[in-house]
Length: 122
Image (tube, rainbow, N blue to C red):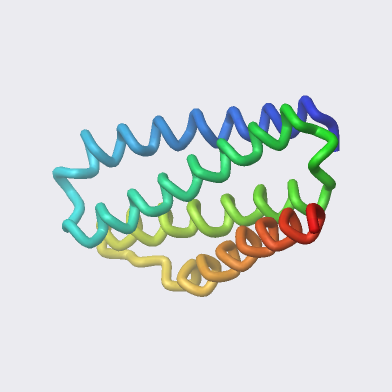
């Protein structure tokens, strides 16, 4: 994995979290229940947190290995994007239930990235 790839991935995740956050706050707020909106915001927050972590790791490239990068990247995609899909499909009355089990798998990838980061520095 190159330093540029990591920084670009972080930047795209960060940019999308701002877009999705604004979309949720301004457009979806009218169409979602409070619980749905809170779930959507959780996806946005976790996406932004991990975008920031990837950006920091990208600028400190020596501290990152491919496994950590992929754990965070797959974790964001599986965790946050499955939440977006669940919330938006539920709001349309066609909840994509198959996404439900994907969210915790994404969470496990995120957690694994953090564990690997800790183990790298012990």
